[in-house]
Image (cartoon, rainbow, N blue to C red; front, side, top):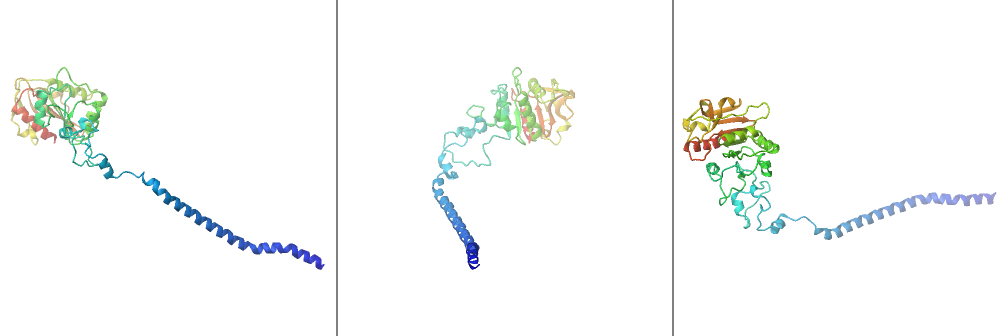
Length: 318
């Protein structure tokens, strides 16, 4: 029996010893885990420090670096001529010492823009209108951001977003009126109706036809009816409180260069400022948040009363 008991104790002893060694093994495992974590962190930090050097060369350029790269170059050089003023066009190729602020950008928009397409006589009537509204030429050329060559253009996309501004359409030639696409009509209508802008149209039947075809409703809307009478054209009571109030009491026909419409063809929101015998030669039409102003003189000749009328029209637009 003693031998049997001794044998049993020998068999039980490893189990007891293994139970006593469990805490030791746990401490060893925890120690190993801590050591592994420390080693891993050390490796990550070392990798980060080593990575700083190769990546330092790929950091973004500073503003000073960009300034040195493009030093002396025109900042508007990549833009078309219609985005520039006359002075900026003439400064191309020269050293630019000015600062182009990021929040200003290129001067796409002006308070006054004049239509200068192929339908405009830039040698006479268009040139007189240009001088009156105060737009410069560039060594005889009609170029820069003060002139609009076509209504169906990228420039018009910018102009249509302008506010409190003026587009002037000088007298158009009878046989060469601009035909606007639906897209161009939409931009022109948006310009007048959405930004408190004014469209000033000067001239005779060709310009009235331009209004009818491009601005008035095609279906159900009343079209302006061109009409003519010998004149002179009397100042109406509607001029009170407007810049037209300071004009002479009448405007002359001036050798048949004045034109108008029949008053009854004016829409309800239309206002006549000068007219006689049912004919109106100066009128405005409210168009959404903006307005259209018609001055019925073809400006192929100099006429002081009509020049003053155009000046008053520019004040009316402001």
